[in-house]
Image (tube, rainbow, N blue to C red):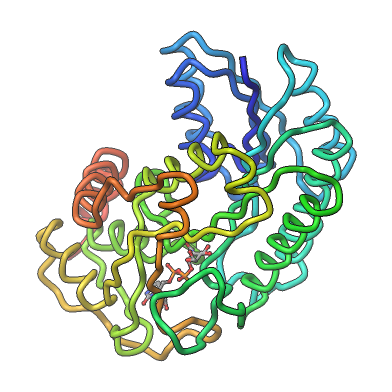
Length: 339
Ligand code: UD1
């Protein structure tokens, strides 16, 4: 049986990758330090394991701790069959967090990725699939974004994520470790943390609307994002993990839907789904933001058959339904205390 390790396994995207593999009956190990990951996501992953009978093992470790990362990779390899693929989702995300505290996200994202690659090299791992960021394109002209464009990152976070891409390519070219970088475009969906100051906009607005709070739009709201449902990102990861090396190794791919939605429009769609009647509050643009994002996804299509099977609208419906189920009590309590 193939063996997989998911870093950031208690996080939003990592937990869905682990969950999906386990439901397919494939055993998985996970690594997380719970800095931003959540115990309830691990409970969901464990439930997926119990449902299929596949095995799940968690290593509680920080990517910045090279020895602990090496031990996790070594123990995953020894734990039954050889470790074949690492899905490297673990990171300290968020553009604004990296602006406020660049050193902390630098060590998690750059040192952490380096530690992971070193451990993978030492233990003969076949492939690493890496969570890269579309924010690497920056604000240069030219849409849709194509992987051949020269990256122009603005904030520390995209710089760090881009450094990870370079390391991935280097480890393929120099050491023959098969690496694939997937540039995510604003992934949203169930399990995205809605109540942190660094939450993604979709999760944040959903919870705010459920609580009857007016969401804030930074800038005029005409900035756009290629919002992508998490299920599409999971399928891109699994396809990239199993594609022939000659098609994917050492390469970078956009993972998106290929559609741009403005924040103003996104606000309207969410407000309709949640029957939220109040307008958004507008405030100043957020420092370090990119203005627009829209992807060309033909490279991922051609290399490993990626298709964004779940549309923006369907993804939003599933997302809202999940938050209503998980956070219904919080929302009801907020409603009860409002005058
Ligand atoms: C997001 C991801 C980042 C990823 C990148 C590319 C998060 C937290 N960040 O960055 O990890 O690498 O996409 O895939 O998921 N906004 C508001 N009001 C709010 C919150 C945000 O107007 O209350 C605006 C922001 O100013 C921005 C847009 O919404 O213009 C998206 O912001 P955000 O969800 O934080 O994501 P990105 O910065 O695009």
